[in-house]
Image (cartoon, rainbow, N blue to C red; front, side, top):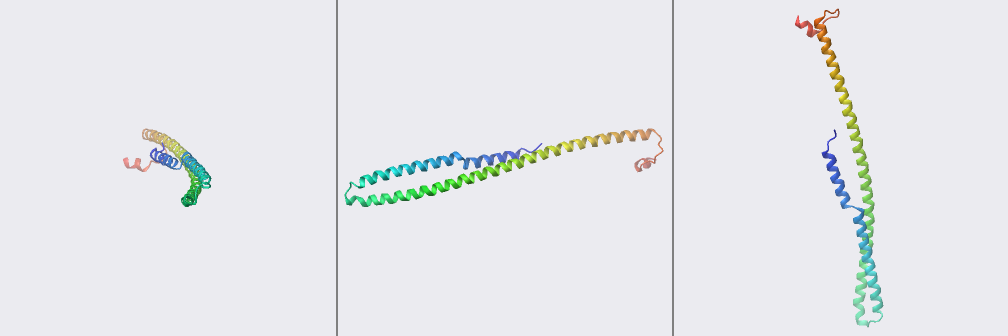
Length: 156
Protein backbone atom coordinates (compact mmCIF):
# COMPACT_ATOMS: atom_id res chain seq x y z
CA UNK A 1 0.00 0.00 0.00
CA UNK A 2 1.33 3.45 -0.79
CA UNK A 3 1.97 5.78 2.14
CA UNK A 4 -0.77 8.36 2.56
CA UNK A 5 1.13 11.12 4.43
CA UNK A 6 3.14 12.51 1.46
CA UNK A 7 0.01 12.60 -0.70
CA UNK A 8 -1.94 14.46 2.01
CA UNK A 9 0.89 16.95 2.37
CA UNK A 10 1.01 17.41 -1.40
CA UNK A 11 -2.76 17.96 -1.50
CA UNK A 12 -2.45 20.61 1.24
CA UNK A 13 0.30 22.39 -0.68
CA UNK A 14 -1.76 22.20 -3.86
CA UNK A 15 -4.78 23.71 -2.10
CA UNK A 16 -2.63 26.50 -0.63
CA UNK A 17 -1.16 27.31 -4.05
CA UNK A 18 -4.58 27.31 -5.67
CA UNK A 19 -5.97 29.56 -2.93
CA UNK A 20 -3.11 32.04 -3.30
CA UNK A 21 -3.18 32.15 -7.08
CA UNK A 22 -6.77 31.35 -7.88
CA UNK A 23 -8.23 32.57 -11.14
CA UNK A 24 -11.25 33.91 -9.27
CA UNK A 25 -9.08 36.08 -7.04
CA UNK A 26 -7.17 37.38 -10.02
CA UNK A 27 -10.41 38.08 -11.87
CA UNK A 28 -11.79 39.97 -8.87
CA UNK A 29 -8.64 42.10 -8.74
CA UNK A 30 -8.94 42.77 -12.44
CA UNK A 31 -12.63 43.72 -12.09
CA UNK A 32 -11.85 46.05 -9.19
CA UNK A 33 -9.09 47.68 -11.23
CA UNK A 34 -11.46 48.12 -14.17
CA UNK A 35 -14.16 49.57 -11.91
CA UNK A 36 -11.64 51.94 -10.32
CA UNK A 37 -10.41 53.00 -13.74
CA UNK A 38 -13.97 53.60 -14.95
CA UNK A 39 -14.77 55.60 -11.81
CA UNK A 40 -11.64 57.72 -12.21
CA UNK A 41 -12.40 58.27 -15.87
CA UNK A 42 -15.96 59.42 -15.06
CA UNK A 43 -14.61 61.75 -12.38
CA UNK A 44 -12.09 63.13 -14.85
CA UNK A 45 -14.77 63.81 -17.43
CA UNK A 46 -16.89 65.57 -14.81
CA UNK A 47 -13.92 67.67 -13.71
CA UNK A 48 -13.07 68.64 -17.28
CA UNK A 49 -16.64 69.72 -17.86
CA UNK A 50 -16.69 71.80 -14.66
CA UNK A 51 -13.25 73.22 -15.29
CA UNK A 52 -14.41 74.86 -18.46
CA UNK A 53 -16.87 76.86 -16.38
CA UNK A 54 -14.62 77.75 -13.38
CA UNK A 55 -12.53 80.87 -12.85
CA UNK A 56 -8.72 80.75 -13.12
CA UNK A 57 -8.06 80.76 -9.34
CA UNK A 58 -9.61 77.27 -9.05
CA UNK A 59 -7.86 75.72 -12.05
CA UNK A 60 -4.58 74.95 -10.22
CA UNK A 61 -6.13 72.44 -7.80
CA UNK A 62 -7.84 70.90 -10.78
CA UNK A 63 -4.46 70.42 -12.49
CA UNK A 64 -3.24 68.64 -9.35
CA UNK A 65 -6.30 66.44 -9.52
CA UNK A 66 -5.47 65.59 -13.15
CA UNK A 67 -1.98 64.64 -12.08
CA UNK A 68 -3.45 62.33 -9.47
CA UNK A 69 -5.71 60.81 -12.10
CA UNK A 70 -2.72 60.20 -14.35
CA UNK A 71 -0.89 58.55 -11.45
CA UNK A 72 -3.88 56.31 -10.73
CA UNK A 73 -4.04 55.31 -14.39
CA UNK A 74 -0.35 54.35 -14.28
CA UNK A 75 -1.02 52.32 -11.14
CA UNK A 76 -3.94 50.58 -12.83
CA UNK A 77 -1.81 49.79 -15.89
CA UNK A 78 0.91 48.37 -13.65
CA UNK A 79 -1.71 46.37 -11.75
CA UNK A 80 -3.08 44.93 -14.98
CA UNK A 81 0.43 43.91 -16.03
CA UNK A 82 0.98 42.25 -12.66
CA UNK A 83 -2.40 40.55 -12.98
CA UNK A 84 -1.45 39.15 -16.38
CA UNK A 85 1.86 37.91 -14.97
CA UNK A 86 0.05 36.25 -12.05
CA UNK A 87 -2.41 34.54 -14.40
CA UNK A 88 0.48 33.20 -16.46
CA UNK A 89 2.31 32.08 -13.33
CA UNK A 90 -0.89 30.41 -12.12
CA UNK A 91 -1.16 28.41 -15.34
CA UNK A 92 2.48 27.34 -15.07
CA UNK A 93 1.92 26.24 -11.48
CA UNK A 94 -1.20 24.31 -12.46
CA UNK A 95 0.71 22.54 -15.23
CA UNK A 96 3.51 21.74 -12.80
CA UNK A 97 0.97 20.34 -10.35
CA UNK A 98 -0.56 18.20 -13.11
CA UNK A 99 2.87 16.79 -13.97
CA UNK A 100 3.58 16.06 -10.30
CA UNK A 101 0.22 14.36 -9.91
CA UNK A 102 0.98 12.19 -12.95
CA UNK A 103 4.37 11.25 -11.48
CA UNK A 104 2.71 10.37 -8.18
CA UNK A 105 0.18 8.20 -10.01
CA UNK A 106 2.99 6.45 -11.89
CA UNK A 107 4.81 5.82 -8.59
CA UNK A 108 1.63 4.43 -7.04
CA UNK A 109 1.21 2.05 -9.98
CA UNK A 110 4.84 0.96 -9.70
CA UNK A 111 4.44 0.37 -5.96
CA UNK A 112 1.29 -1.66 -6.60
CA UNK A 113 3.09 -3.81 -9.19
CA UNK A 114 6.10 -4.31 -6.89
CA UNK A 115 3.85 -5.32 -4.00
CA UNK A 116 2.07 -7.84 -6.22
CA UNK A 117 5.39 -9.23 -7.46
CA UNK A 118 6.68 -9.49 -3.89
CA UNK A 119 3.52 -11.30 -2.79
CA UNK A 120 3.87 -13.78 -5.65
CA UNK A 121 7.53 -14.34 -4.79
CA UNK A 122 6.61 -14.98 -1.16
CA UNK A 123 4.02 -17.55 -2.28
CA UNK A 124 6.64 -19.24 -4.45
CA UNK A 125 9.16 -19.29 -1.59
CA UNK A 126 6.54 -20.77 0.75
CA UNK A 127 5.73 -23.45 -1.82
CA UNK A 128 9.43 -24.25 -2.26
CA UNK A 129 9.93 -24.53 1.51
CA UNK A 130 6.90 -26.80 1.82
CA UNK A 131 8.19 -29.08 -0.95
CA UNK A 132 11.68 -29.01 0.53
CA UNK A 133 10.49 -30.10 3.97
CA UNK A 134 8.38 -32.83 2.37
CA UNK A 135 11.41 -34.09 0.44
CA UNK A 136 13.53 -34.04 3.60
CA UNK A 137 10.94 -36.13 5.47
CA UNK A 138 10.80 -38.58 2.59
CA UNK A 139 14.59 -38.74 2.50
CA UNK A 140 14.78 -39.48 6.23
CA UNK A 141 12.29 -42.32 6.01
CA UNK A 142 13.59 -43.79 2.79
CA UNK A 143 17.00 -45.05 1.77
CA UNK A 144 18.09 -43.13 -1.33
CA UNK A 145 20.82 -43.80 -3.79
CA UNK A 146 21.91 -40.17 -3.93
CA UNK A 147 24.52 -38.86 -1.48
CA UNK A 148 23.36 -37.20 1.68
CA UNK A 149 23.78 -33.51 2.27
CA UNK A 150 26.23 -32.11 4.81
CA UNK A 151 23.50 -31.51 7.38
CA UNK A 152 22.31 -35.14 7.02
CA UNK A 153 25.83 -36.55 7.24
CA UNK A 154 26.56 -34.64 10.47
CA UNK A 155 23.65 -36.45 12.12
CA UNK A 156 25.35 -39.86 11.60
